[in-house]
Length: 377
Image (tube, rainbow, N blue to C red; front, side, top):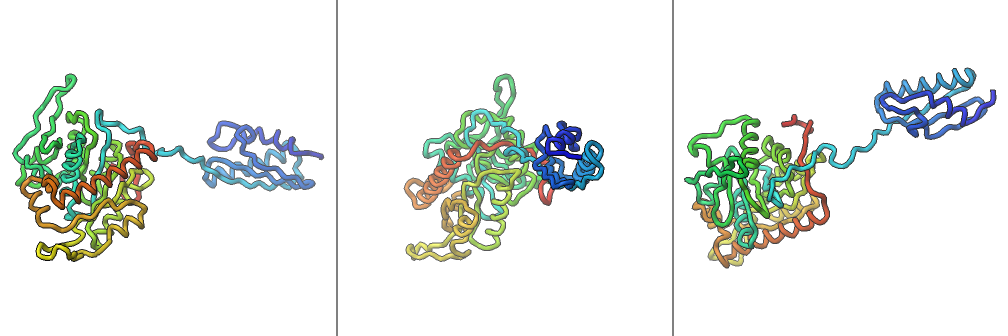
């Protein structure tokens, strides 16, 4: 019996690939047909990647050609699966912006004790001094320290009526609005909460607060990568993240994990850069000397390796710690060397933020189903 490609195509219109609504010809699944006498080779591409779907398609193509054309035809069927690419950010849903807040910046660290909260407080004050409207959300629910750093330990947020709804009014000092779990817990007692409870408290401070109009909301995250971090990226569209580290190898290893968390495909929060704290020590009596107690250029090298920016290096200076302990961030010291350091870091952060906003689409809220090595919140 004589036959041609058109005959084969006509036969294949009777076959629908598993899970697809159109026949093989309508869905453009038949990619190639080669005829050598009584030998026919058919190349088919389907969307279903399972072995069962491939085998079923192969058998049905062979059977259709034998039944409708000729039993004697030697049929070879090559079935390949090509899963359609998902649109960008398929693991996300459109971000639920907090009304009035333009940029949400997460400040994170791989490990504790690197000065993340101190840097957050000073960045906030530095931005406020530049004329921006700034808020700080203390999301370190297990160790909230912002009330101490802003000298508002004894303050309590008031309830205000906003469009018929009762909301918390953030505490304000040094031109910065502040909310922290520290305002609602006994400072002498440990917060012993499961992740779900901590996440609920965090959501209340985000969405049940009257933040007003803010250019920046800085979020001081707990150390590490855990429930609170996932809750944040699920709750609000974070514009970008800043990673804080010290120069020593163990801190940098954890900082690298922090960067990796934000860069995961199903989180995809741009990392604005890395800030190195405790970079070097300069004694008062030897102002021209620098002693790299914890190592040298650690964050600089890490930033280069990860393709992100080094936003700045902060020296190991006693007055930074003292200023935080008494609730008077060191950036408030006009014309001091430390104010200049934080101002430079703030400018570098703004530069990276402008690049991010010019070159990347708005961040979206993450809907996490599963994460490698952990379960969804």
